[in-house]
Length: 223
Image 1 (cartoon, helix red, strand yellow):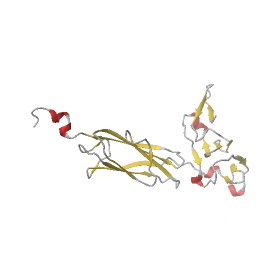
Image 2: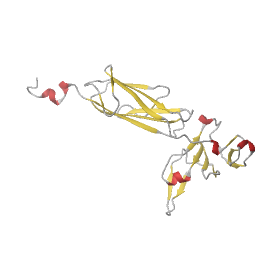
Image 3: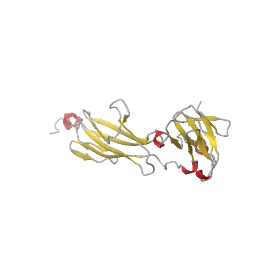
Image 4: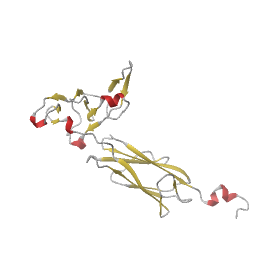
């Protein structure tokens, strides 16, 4: 059933989590909830949830050193090694000190670095006006972060071309060919490897037809 939050008005509202199955749910000393799910440990701030934010505040996965994602969690006791405060323990596996784990300030920032067409670079600020009749373009992109060493996931999609979102992997550019005149929208999104902290950037572009194919090309006495 996932996690439901009571909004104080006699209504319950479902909130997005990486998985609807929650094996265990405990509260730390700062009032935040920790949930054990089949897709890792999730930290939840109830105040942010009730305010309408759907994303988990933090998710711990293989990228953070967990050997498995499928477990429950239980409350542990403070000790000298934990430097005080409540601790969340993975029974038989590891211990986590909640106050030493900070959520990244924001997800990785997607960057559209350049657009090239017909051997020349086209400005990517605002609407990208490409040369008339061009049919092949190359777009360079990246994802920038200084807040965490966690792996970054990058995906892109030129609407109307291809099956949808494509994972970039280690590539930081893509090419399109056989493009017809018209309007296009390139979408780039980045997140942590577990899809948390997702952000998106858009680039709108237009390929005008060659003059002889435009309405002006058929005007009597134009030349």
